[in-house]
Image (cartoon, rainbow, N blue to C red; front, side):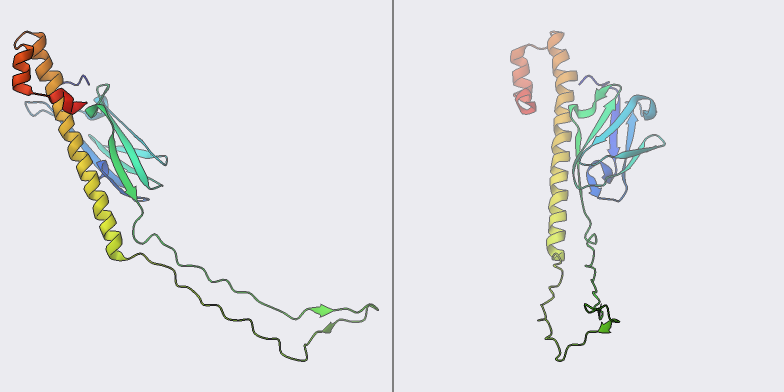
Length: 211
């Protein structure tokens, strides 16, 4: 990843971690220099989202991304800054159905009628009436639609948020380590500011953590 070390990219909003299927979510990107001046991200940043369903992106201002997914699952968010993939890998966003996405079963009603009959001599139709009442069909128990326990649903949603938060934290941590190696350690070695032994003493096994 060969990013400009003078540019700091901030990501705000729930859309970078996921949301609810069928409901619009969003996140905002802000890029600043060390001196605090901002950049027009519409000119230097590209955003692409892939996953189980097609995603339509809406860009607003400098730079808010709004989007809606049609299917649950994991989606990959690619952020490219000046042609370089931010973090070296995509962000992962999780989407699931909301609690009230179940539909009540429809009732089916059947109707029976008397059927007119004709004899072999083509006499006028007559109505068939049985001499004894037909037995009633046995009544079958109607099962109520199964509803998920609200506590179970809330626990599943909490678990999904925890997983997303852990992944986001780990990705931010590895991004910072990558920046340290590419723009800190490697220039020091290449310019003979420190040698390999001094590098091992100062930075230990940081490359092994990134592998």
